[in-house]
Length: 465
Image 1: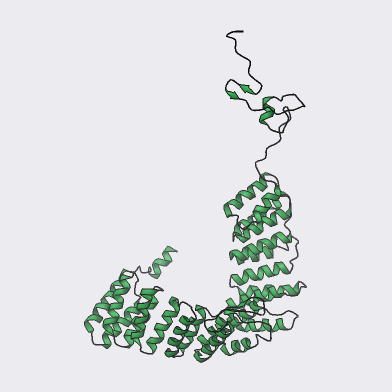
Image 2 (image 1 turned 120 degrees about the vertical axis):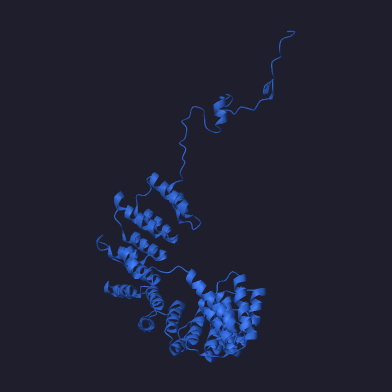
């Protein structure tokens, strides 16, 4: 009829095209709700929506090294909230994760949480907590956990003992490490390579070179073969004990033991020579290490153990230079400094300070000041020890004006001279007959000492206590 609206065509509305409706049956249009829900039929019961991942996903994220401590705490709470902490395995996983982040307090708290949920502490979870204490440097708590095994009716195994030895080694408690090593055989086990290496590390850190040699000899009587950790720990202990002859003899046995010395091995041997001022032996050992590492300026070569026999590093050169300085061979120090440049090893502040000290011994104060100038311009930045050695060099050569200039430069660089540096500067002034400058410096030392906080008298300390 005229004036009546025309019916819209199928699929067309007054506002334009309408979205097509999905079909529930062959030709029956579904309600709008079903269209919005997609494939689910209208009237179907809604599926439960979960906000937390499932157990496997949570455990995977807990094991991930990329998980940060705060995230790990949230994951632990999610595990508890969903009732997933119902098995010792989950607790062990969480304890190990805390241990890898050096959070030994949370690892122990997680272990102690087990009995409150009706779970007995087992040996695996306790061993993981002891390892967490080792990583966190809490050797006392590792010892307490080990001692508490008998109360929980648990018998330690070799892994538990090794974890305790490592904890004692990290805490520099070599006595407890040796006692734990002896406990292994008392329990009926035989020490493995981890046991020997952890005990040797403890003896090295405790400066017990005699015990290190004894343990190495004991290891040779077993079927175990020493590795680089065994070799380097024993070498380091001998070096700290100033046993350079035994260190050199052990180094010569490396090939027979199936070990190719690496940079750490070389540095330990050089340290033994440095402490004994055996500068000739140090220079020869460094040259041999350079040949093993591919020659001067060359690359590293593969080792027999599948690693790389690295070339000497800055520590190697610095230690050898220290041996030359202690032996009074300042010319050799200069030669090694040039060899560092040839091998593309950048000197650090320790090697530079060693060179300045060596030139002081050779009364080469000009060379000492030139090196100090190079440190200013090219790095590394000189520290208090750098200036101290330079001032001492000026004192030896009666260069009092230069010594005073160095004191002024220290102040410009924000470095505070020590009382020892002032003594050398005063001595330089006195040797040159500049008594007025010496007097001024002595007044500065008195002012400096009076401005420092003084400890309370003994009677007041007792009252404060």
